Image (tube, rainbow, N blue to C red; front, side, top):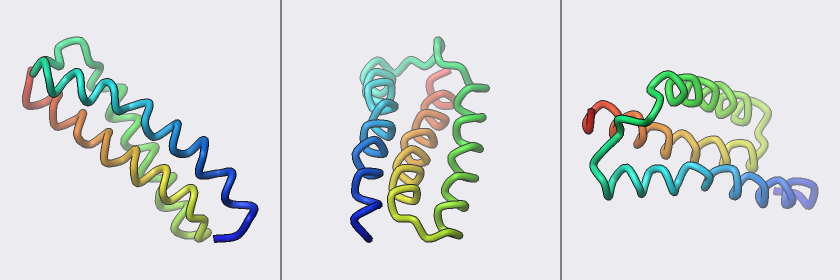
Length: 84
C-alpha cells in the first residue's frame, strides 16, 4: 500500500457499510419482501467485476471495498431467497 491509496480506504469503508443497516434489519425482522432481488443481483454482478478489476490492477482499496460489498450483497441475496 502506498500513500496515494490510503484516502481510497475511507470512502471505500463508508461505501461498503451502506449495505450493513439493510443486512441487520433483514436479519432481525426475518423479512425481505420489500427488498429488490434485481437490484441486489445487479449490485453483486457489478461488485464481482470491480473486484476482478482491483485484483488485476493490484489496488488494495478497490479490492477491500468490493470484497466487503460482495460479502454483504451475497448475504442480502441469501436473505432475499430465504425470507421470501
